[in-house]
Amino acid sequence: MMVTGILSVQSEAITRVKRPPVVIARVLAMAIAAAATVSVPPVQAARRPAPPFTLTLLDGKTLRLADLKGSSVILLFWAPWCPTCNAEAASWEREYREWQGKGVSLVGIGLLDNRAAVERFMRQYHLTFPTGYDADGSIAKAYGFTVQPFWAWIAPDGTLLRAAYGPADGEELDAAFHTLSGR
Image (cartoon, rainbow, N blue to C red; front, side):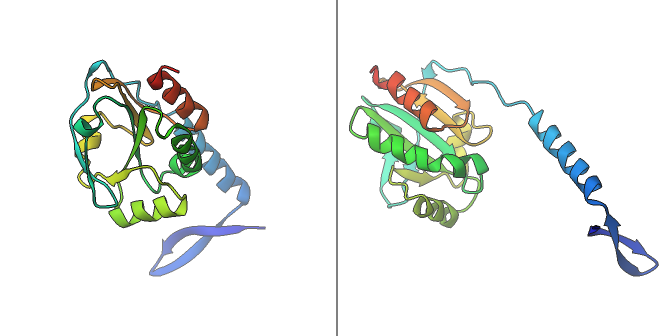
């Protein structure tokens, strides 16, 4: 069986060039291997005042970092098209529900897409934690955002404890909640 898909132009006519599946598989394997060798940015320097922000939540309310003073906070930056974010969204909601009211706030910040896509993502995964849309990326930039998912841990006194790329599956998020709550 031959696979078609690569186009070539020959004297004003476009023809499909047939490539055996093995060639396509090798090219795909090389692309995956190259992507796997991309280095992930290190944890950002922390132990500094967390950058203040004002975020309009999807429900229309306004949230400022100052509103959360006295509570530990996890800011979770994500994008609707991010495969890791899609894979982990259900665990974010489980952890939010488990830790809700226990002194740690989870705030989602959707970005790198449009507000409608962020709202669809929230509905698709039945996410109920407070989430806003960082339209211009200014909040993400202030926290040293590199790639998503990206999360920042903030102590009750407003100190940024950690800001880093990282999949935030249930186990890792649970560990963050435990660390921040002191439990």
